[in-house]
Length: 427
Ligand SMILES: *Cc1c(COP(=O)(O)O)cnc(C)c1O
Image 1 (tube, helix red, strand yellow):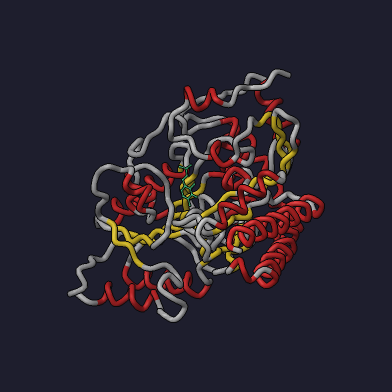
Image 2: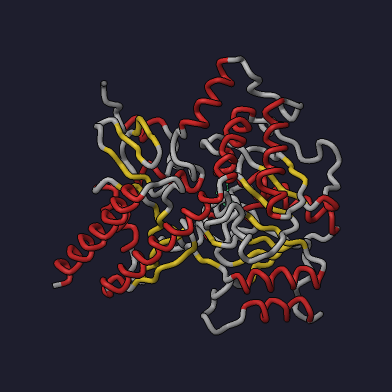
């Protein structure tokens, strides 16, 4: 096979490209938790498409259904017309996911991206309440369009808007200031005091574990209190489960163990199952006051994604799937705590929940060096946080012990190598 000239991307693709810079090779093939490049190098994938590939690459069961569907000339594009795969997805999602969890939501299909479900949620919250403001949280990430950016914390991304981002008040996320400051006592003071300068908002939007903002996991108690505050003040609670959802934290929805019931839930990334674009907005039924077509989009009815999304839900019919995530999560977190203890020079802290974890280091640039070293050693892993201070482990949920052990060993070897090289420079 002839090799692709990697300078093509520099010459022809916009400067905006990003992941190619961290993983500079041409990928050709992927299966489960493995990827291969043109040179035949094998990589273990601890990135999972930033959470869009929770079931790994090219799942054979989903692939077979999709190929059959395509070969039978099933409908590909249909706006939001009725199709059989859409009916099957709606029914299966209701039966396999919502009903057993005692949840009742109407299902909306916005455009097929995460930012689009967030935009639809913000619009609907404003329409339902007649209020304009939204409360967002420090280090939240919700997407790149203007509404989603306005509730996103990252200064670099916000600046990209080029216009003032308005009608949003940012409040401190759990443990943002320090572990002693009760951020919700602070938040509630602003709501109850008419002199605070903060109006009662239409909604609060949050991630239960912040994916891009540094793998910060809110405690279940904090989440329960947010829900109570929202109820007390008639504020809608929007959980952005675009990244933390679909099993990433150990349960289908990231908020299940907190026992809360958000008014609106945003999902995308892994909801399509196979890495195909799909997004849904789950809406408490009495809030579903949209006029027909009020939030539109050409690619809402992605039938190929419906086929794989429905197939993916069969994983959730078997309780051992969740149990396995829970067991392996424990192993991963123990490993991270072990690394932190064994290498104090790292000045590290293990963070996160489930398969959404990482190590934050106080040393500038170190997390990126570890990720770069890991890539050299055959592991794909990204960084997270406002200063890229966290290296982020995102293995697919289907990874076996062998793959997990191999990946964790590469991480430890990379930490050792990077710390070793640092010592040489210092001495
Ligand atoms: C990725 C992400 C988004 C945006 O999704 P896109 O498909 O990139 O628009 C929104 N919210 C969260 C929490 C995300 O991780």
